[in-house]
Length: 550
Image (tube, rainbow, N blue to C red; front, side, top):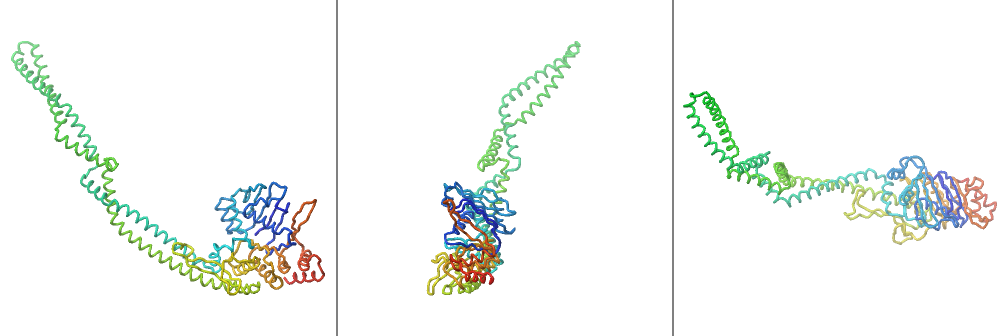
């Protein structure tokens, strides 16, 4: 509920501070006293368009502060939490408007956008009047109001859950279909690549082994001539040394030095033999067979060429082969899996259709009850010639959603034989306000914003109709705080508290002020509303009877 309102430098209001009570709060005063200014100031702090004309003449800045006390589960607190603003304690909205048209908005002393201020304002206060195009005048909220009126929470939950399940099933099927389509486009390439890799049949580590063998054979090819020459020289030298050793052996006994020479020569022959053996082994190890080298190089180039083709290393070719085989196998499995996903979509959509149909049926039944409830309120409000209906229109399939498959809109016909039209198109402001009141009373159990404001809802009526309006406003005030701007003494008498708006001229300056009335002052104010400027004893007595009859 709105607990306090402070206004500075708004049109005729220089400074005003008000503390509001719960229940039905009535605002009265003579025509032109400034009641509309008060509502304009409240609209400003609730996020209405910033109009520089609201700044009091001679002032640089207008300022409005509104304080609200709402429960922990109130939608406004959820909005605060979503926007990372303090969500505990009182909610304080503040709006500053400069004479040049610039404005700033604050919530709990934190700067916010005008958009967020407007969203919070809509959650905290409902303003019902001839020019207000939100709340009950906007078809956007009519379906939710009907669902709340009928208590269709379980039906809504079922529709939403099945809608989400169907959406998820469609997304899964679409994703699988797109993947399968991409694989199908690559089928020919995939089959060729798998066949090519299978034919290659590369073994782990093969590329490294081939590279080492190739390097060794290339080295052998470079050393072939040198090895041949060395082998020839070794052969000639060994023969010469052997011949010399035989001759030396025949004469070695002739002198000790010859014996030592023979021994050294024998050792040389042994070393030469070992060297010749090692040389033969080296020739064999560095085999430079051109045919074998060509075979190794061909295999190595084949491996590396295929690796370049697939943009992987040669060592990764066996892994790639396994991956491509898996993709090829998945083509078959994907076709089977897609059929299962499509079946799941059909099942989920059927479940959603069933839940949405049940929701539609419940809405139609609820619409009849709501229409009857509103119709019962019209005659006491002098709208007995008018008709009200809840129009439920099936939506095209492209507009189906988690909230169901139909559009809901409240319509009225003000005269017999007249066509039904949306609430917002009704011509008479007084009739519109009374229609809204009738609808609000019928919807009272659905919950509302913590504060409702009705602007001159009793315009053009009096007597029994005004009493009926006052009675219904009082009933609404049992569910939420209701502020009403009224010229009707019957409505004013039903208030739980009453404020009088006055306009005065001081030092050539016009000012609007607001004062809460004590019980005796209320009687005098209601008597004034009954008789005009000259308050008669009869008017005072009638005022007393009105107050006593509450």
